[in-house]
Length: 277
Image 1 (cartoon, one colour):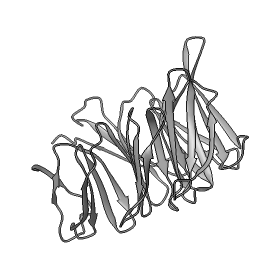
Image 2 (tube, one colour):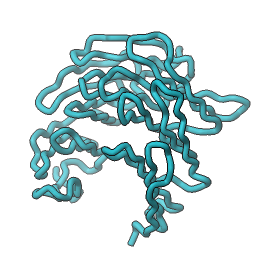
Image 3 (cartoon, one colour):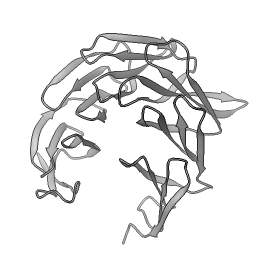
């Protein structure tokens, strides 16, 4: 049924805000021709005027969504079902052999799934748009916290988690799809990298619990920004390749600071506000 949740996205569009089907909005994403919305029960595409052009029930118990250009990847976190689609139809669907931890999709429809099994380290599978397996390998790390594909689908990055002397380590690995050796490895001590996002085929964002970084895909660039004991609440990457971080000591957004970083993790703008008022 329709809930009282409303979507205030693309504020310039004539039809916004719009009502959303489902009781909980899990994720929204900008697409080529509008906005994709994942709720606990449905997947919906809205055009730039807020009109629903596609709405389907997804039947996933713990739904995840990744988007790039006109492609979307839906999957069941810690389940096995996945589905890739463009703006008009499902391009591929199937069941993974093991529970899915995370995934991503590129602008050409190439997609990746990371799965976990009790007997082995995390497994990485890269698929072509039609679902044909391009490459798979076993991670050297026990766990993988996130995976990302570059816009063209040519490069892949994943964050491996390990412990060293009781301290959590994150290692961001960058590889050209189809090759067996890594191009780059970036290690972060005492850090949990929670999200990886390619801005271009040459640049990768890594968002963590105590820092964010901009990393080179082929060049050895590692620009880091420390949060210095501030609590990260929200973040977003805009089309200009800038990272916006929202810090607040409380979950309701009071006494918040919004920091915009440039492509070398330097503060470009800072706004201090009370999001709760």
